[in-house]
Length: 79
Image (cartoon, rainbow, N blue to C red; front, side, top):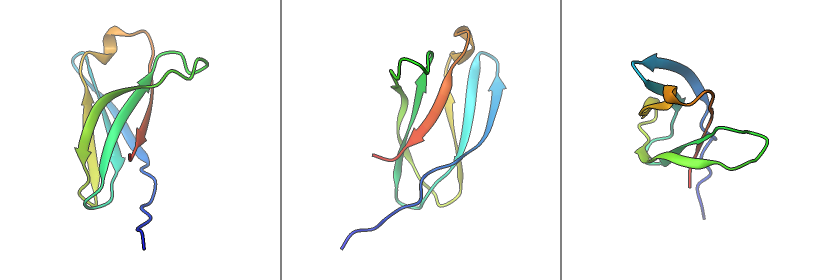
């Protein structure tokens, strides 16, 4: 048997200094990665923050220095 976990959903994005904070839903005992891409057309996603523990609630990950990029797209994955 295996356990299916719901996909995480980004619930908010905010700014603190040069950092971008991305909040998303989580499942208890799951692990997540925050990935980013500067040019969505290229499809070249990079993991920005890894091994984020799920709590069963909303979790916030910080993309340090993200405002130094002119634009960035985000997604959250569960490996």
